[in-house]
Image 1 (spheres, rainbow, N blue to C red):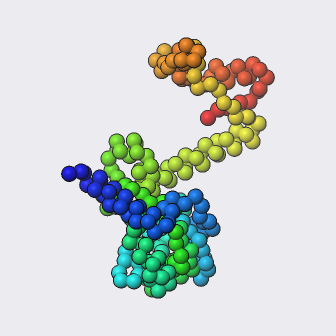
Image 2: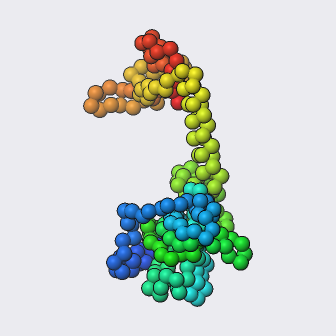
Image 3: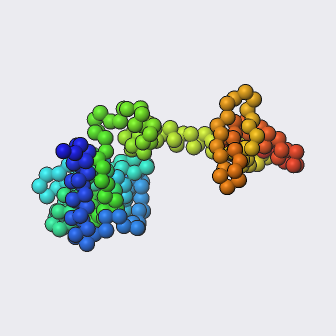
Length: 237
């Protein structure tokens, strides 16, 4: 017998076959996303077109609620058999957590006060074949988090936030130096002569040139050569 993950993958492959048998492309090339999830929440009473990953499915009879997540956040979707038709509603049975869908509809507020998209139509954008890590225990194995960073980004919002903060930090550094008259340059990553004082260099071989190269340790020498060449203010990140 295969592992639990293999069994779940097989179930999803069967759903994929059923989707294709219905004449639906489970990996379409285009969908017009007009609003992010966070933008849609600011548009109560208006029509929106959103897209993202399914992170929650709760159904009963002819009604189904789903959590749609994109880079900006999360919004609830409301599917009604009465609104989208029996055929389209039955297609929801072939969806799994982790799938990407696009949905159009009108934003309203539920009795619980949650802003929700009342779906008029939806499209499957990507059928996932592997399950996400279990919701409540999350992804805690550091080895998996580092080697499969995409899973870490999906399951841990704080990791995504770290990526955003890092990007903003380096952008701020670039803006500061540029305003001071510095220009950003790119210098070689591989060098013929190792630098970095007593540090042990990483060595690789260039087959076409039949030459050993060394992974750079310090940017200093190349930046100094640019200064010799006439540039007065240079930086590299």
